[in-house]
Length: 90
Length: 423
Image 1 (cartoon, rainbow over the protein chains, first blue to last red):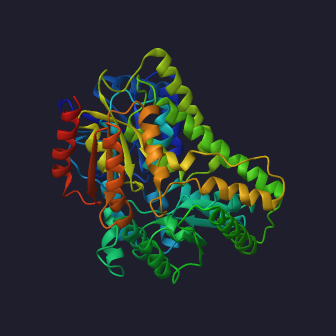
Image 2 (image 1 turned 120 degrees about the vertical axis):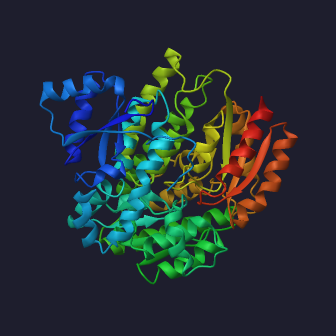
Image 3 (image 1 turned 45 degrees about the horizontal axis):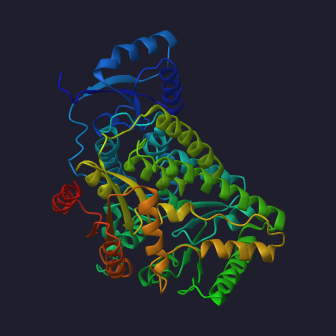
C-alpha cells in the first residue's frame, strides 16, 4: 500500500489512552488528527476514536509510542478513506 | 464504540439501528474534515467530540443526572439557556441534521415537512440518539407550524414545555416574550426543585455571555482576508456548541481564537489568496449536516460566515448584565433574544440588514441563500433577500436542498457555476 491516500490509524481500547497519546504527539510535534475509527476497524477495539497519521509521519509516531510506552491497541493502514468529493453524508 | 453499548442499552436505544448510523460517521468526517490541509491544531477538541459524539457528552449528562441535575433538550435559539443554568439545569441541543432519522419521522409526519423536523422526531422515535433519550424535558417554541405540530407528537413521549414566541417585534411583543421567559422560569424551578434567584440568573447570564463572546472571537477571525479557518471547521464548532457545557465551550473557543489570531499575524491561511468568500444564509445546519459547506469548499470557494441560527444569530447581541432584579433580568433576556431575526417574524427586514452588514464585515464576494425543502418561511423570504442583495450589487444564489445525498451533483453544478461567475 503506497497510494497517496494511505493513512495509518492508531487504535485504542479507551479514549483516555488516545487523548494521552494525542498530547504526547502534540508535544513532540508529530502531525496527526483525532478521527472516528474507520468502520472496518471498529470491530477490533472498543473505542470510537483513533489517531490518523500520514505515511510520512508514522515512523515518528511509532517512536513516540515506544519512547513513552504509550497505551494503544494497534496500528492499521487503510487506503481510500478520504475522498472530499464523494458526497456521502450522514 | 462498544464502550458505550451498555449505556445505550440502559437508555433504551435500538442498538442495531444505531450501529447503522455509526457506520457512516467515519466516512463523512474523513471526507469533510480530514481532507483539509493545515487545519488549526485547536480543532482537536471538536474532532474528539465528533469522534465520540454519542459517547462522552451523553455519559457526562447521565453522570449529572445521577447527581440530581435535570437535562433540558431544546430545538431553537430562542429558548434562553440562562434560565435553565440558573436553576442548575443543563441544556442540550436536540435538532436533527441527519437523513438517517428522516424515515422514522415520516412515519408520523407528512413527507412535506422539513427534514430538520422529520429528523428530530425520527431521532426520538427510532431510539437512535442518546441526547433524545437523556433529556428529562423538551422545550419547544412556536417558531414555525411544522415544529408546533411536531412538538405535539414529541410531547406524548417526554415532558414538554412550549414557549409562545411572538411573531412581530412591537414593544408589546418584547413584553410578551419577557412574560413567557418568566413563566418558563417557574416551570424550570418546579421541574428542578431549585429556586432561581437574581444572583443565580445574573451568574448564568454572565456564563452565556462569555460563551457568546468566545464564539464571536472565532467568527471575527474569519473576517480577515488571511482566512485562518475553513467554513467546515467553524460550522462544526458552532454545531457542537449547542451540546457542550457552556463554560468549557467558551474555554475551547477562546483557545481556538488564540490560534486563529496568531495565524492571522503570521499570515497563515487555509485557502490560496484570491479564493472567493461566501456567506451562507438560510435555515440552520444541524449536526451532522455538512453537505452545503463541503460542496462549496471543494468547489474552489470558502465559507466565511453563516447568517443563520447555527451561525451569527447564536452569539450576536449580549444580554445586559446590569439588570438587578429578576423582573429586570427577564426583560433584558427578552430584549436580547427578540433581536434574533428569524423568518418566523413579520416583517423581518432586520435579517436583510444583518446580511448586508455581514457582507461588508466579512468581505464577502457572494451570498448563498439556502433553505431546507418544505421550509416555507425561509423559502418565501428568499425573494426579499435576493432583491435586496441584487440592489446592493451583491451576487446571490438561492438554493433548496434536504439531507439526502442525491442532489449533490446538481448542487455542485449550480454552486460551481456561481463561483465561476464570481471570478
